[in-house]
Length: 137
Image (cartoon, rainbow, N blue to C red; front, side, top):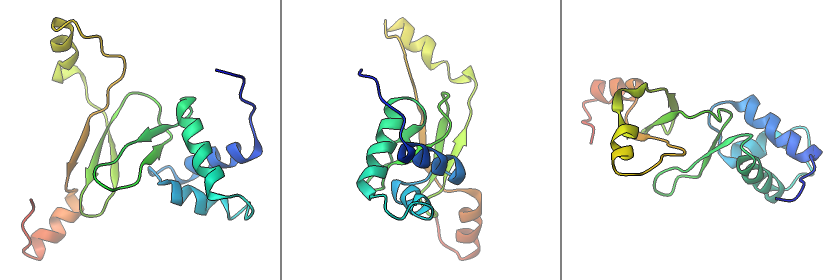
């Protein structure tokens, strides 16, 4: 990969992801960045988010369905739970109790990176639905 110089715009995008720290969408990052740099384009923000992800400075989380990708300041291996009601994304850390790697090793498959993505309903939304008499999926 060729040398990639650090730019002011890339630094602003990275700072916005850290400031938001809640798995922001590119649109959220753009709205944060334009507060200090109203001349930055959406394309610049989107390109820099993807580049920062490729450089492993942030993580890119592919969302289900038509939901836009999210970005995460955590680059360590961790997993996510997604509430289908409020659209919040939660970090979850799992220990080795799943033993997935052992199973895959027996299949002669080396895991280099993994991410478990769970979809469901968060406690807060579940309580609201329960109170309103709505049953979950």
